[in-house]
Image 1 (cartoon, rainbow, N blue to C red):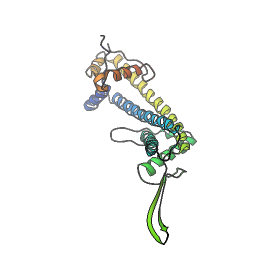
Image 2 (cartoon, helix red, strand yellow):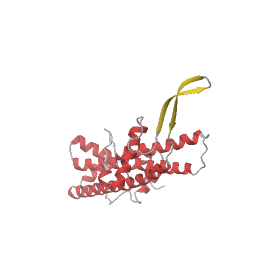
Image 3 (tube, rainbow, N blue to C red):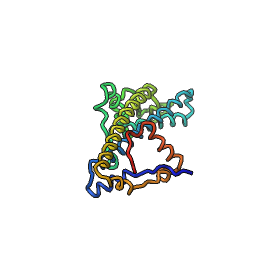
Amino acid sequence: MTAPDPTYNLSAFADRFFAEKRLIPLANQIRRARDLHSLSTDLVMAMESIDALEAELTVPADPDDHRKLITESALLNNALVLYVRATKTESKERGGFDLRTRFGDEEKIVHKELSDLRDSAIAHFGSGGSYGGEWQAELVILQFSGAEAKVGVVTRRQTVDRNLVRRARQQIETALNLMRAVYYEKLAEITASIEAEAAADAKFSEEIHRHPLNLDLFMKSADAADAARGSFGSGYAMGSVSHN
């Protein structure tokens, strides 16, 4: 059985250069590529949630099927959380990328709507800000039954808004295409930088060879590793780097 072509851990390579305070621009490019790919992955997962939700919505509604209602609500919430996490937020472990400068006017409106829903209806209780529908409503009532009366609270919650689902799909698709384009640009920058370093320093490849990676182990299976390797032939990688 032929051994797979070698894989090298450029993230570890970049971490070492940060620690050694060398080749910081290249190290920054590598770290940024990881961030951008992670953001793109969130958007892919958001699209998968929308796909699954739309499949659920093709099944005739049954008001007594609470599992279906909860599944639909969970899929929509998951899509919105992932979309906003990818397009609005950042953390100590991942830098963000503000796509609003690349959105058109209508896309900016939908972006705010989805962000408001995540921030003011899903992650935190509220009406959803700029969302025009009714996400939830609660009232305290006095209910009479003959001569007796009891105080209670009634609640109405939105599970799925089909028009919102359509807007979310279009917005997530747009954001994913834009984020992928930025990610591919960063891969091209890294490739050019590595080629330039290799041309300037005959021993530069030795720096990379210090960080071999068992991709099968990292991906948890040989099949997953093969799928990852295969993705580099379908647009996930730009340019080429020699490793002689």
